[in-house]
Length: 170
Image (cartoon, rainbow, N blue to C red; front, side, top):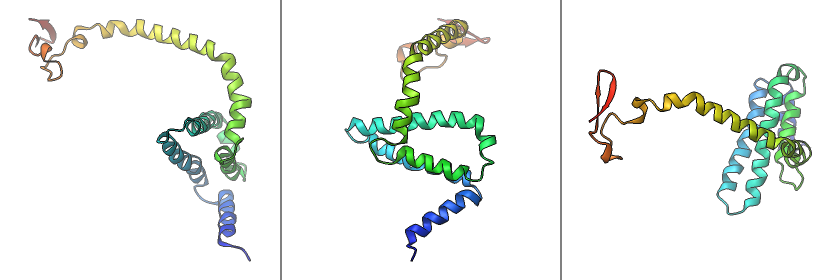
């Protein structure tokens, strides 16, 4: 005799292979419970549950990026969405070495540690070049001075007037 739990699992597995909107269901499955558990973890004083869910989201983002490029090919395989749901389950199942910890510790973390200095340097250079390109815009008189009285900065109140599209000090 099949119990309702077993019947539900069998139905869900068949649906993930042949059902309409299996991709949507799979993505909801990989997002909804982990998002809820992450919010719950943020509200506890325990740091370990925060680390657990942050690790899950790093792995989730990593595979979402990979999947973006391979989804067109992989989605044609009949068991793809079922396998992806099982993958999500493996990544967030509450065991000591779940999928997200294994993938993070063996794939993502070593590469992150090896290349984080280079990435930090590149981001610093991009930020510096962005500041060079935007500094003329940020130093514009129209952006530097408030044109209307501000209740938050009353000392700036009526010291500036807009006349002919230009900002003048009084």
